[in-house]
Image 1 (cartoon, one colour):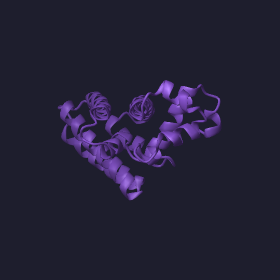
Image 2: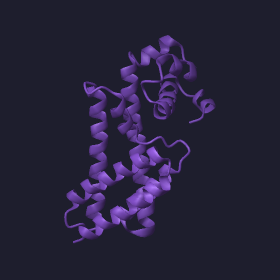
Image 3: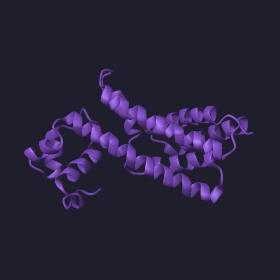
Length: 194
């Protein structure tokens, strides 16, 4: 969301929109509360009324990112599936679309795990829940495709998705990462067909 559009929102939403943009682009360790306050245009007291600590804001960021990303991913899969009918192949097409976005910075949940200490159980729990929901969606898609072992197919698909996200971010070549993912997804679809 553009900074100018953010100004019209209530304080809590401005803070969260700013955090969504900055934390995803730069990480939670690098971006401080003062920068969030400055860029969201709220008073310090207003910030702390809504988010008593930076950890609370990071948790809210992760929850919101999860909700938005999953809604986007589901909608894009549905649109692709309606055109082609192959759920696993659609996954790679949706990834390619995401990787090509100018604001693509990898997976916010993988990034947060790399940034936080192992004792940061709150962030890890949210990230784990995100990945569990993504896995459930992939298992559901494998079932829809008639996979003989949909749970195994979904787990393998998740590994492929995770690897493609990391490769796209690491190499800057999202098209190649998505193409490789498509080949691997086709392989597991063929191997696990009923």
